[in-house]
Image (cartoon, rainbow, N blue to C red; front, top):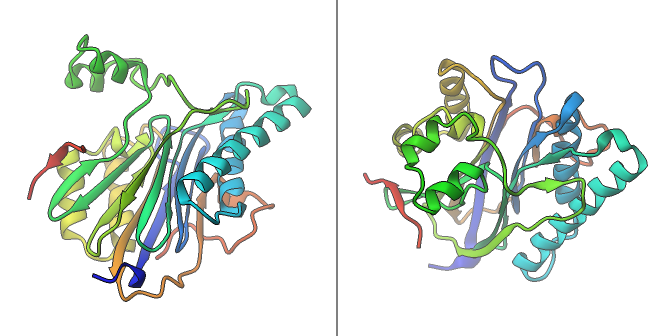
Length: 276
């Protein structure tokens, strides 16, 4: 395979869900960069945090080594949030999860902090490629709680790590090879916490059209009660693809008047979660 011919096809969608008054999620997808952010903070300042993180990453100079470039952009986002909070103390305490992938034509840099998730479908097998930075996941890791108990725990969304207005952030960062036929899903917990891995596997395997796929995923989460904002980015690694698609920004970031790109509300050892 000639890795230099690989490109990305992608789609993204964000929805407020059925119980939240505002959408504090944001996402971005382009031929090189995929990002999902789930904001948090009182008085809707989670919107500010997620939109700012997306704006900084989408506008960063992501040249050179992808891992170094992506981690540097995340550190820049953290400092931007800190500067905003220093200037306006009401913004203290705002933050966001962040799951991002930077593509260089042969592979990805993957960066993750919080409980938004990344999944990879390869050869019919679905893998979760991120690790939740939550209190309940730490208890599962220590053997003090089962995954089933964690899924029902009332504090299952309590984060141990996030991108916050303190200016400090410690993302998990890694390098991953890309192969034609791979399919990736990045999503907020409004999707992953409602739609089961088995259903995700079925849809990622069976729905070819990416716009239809992201619409179906959001609809399923809403039919499951829509308890939170719902955001997802899906991308296919394709051989012989020029990778000249237009960037997409959705959720809180799409309302950010400072965003510098075309906007729209949707377009075009890992452990296996489900085998084919």
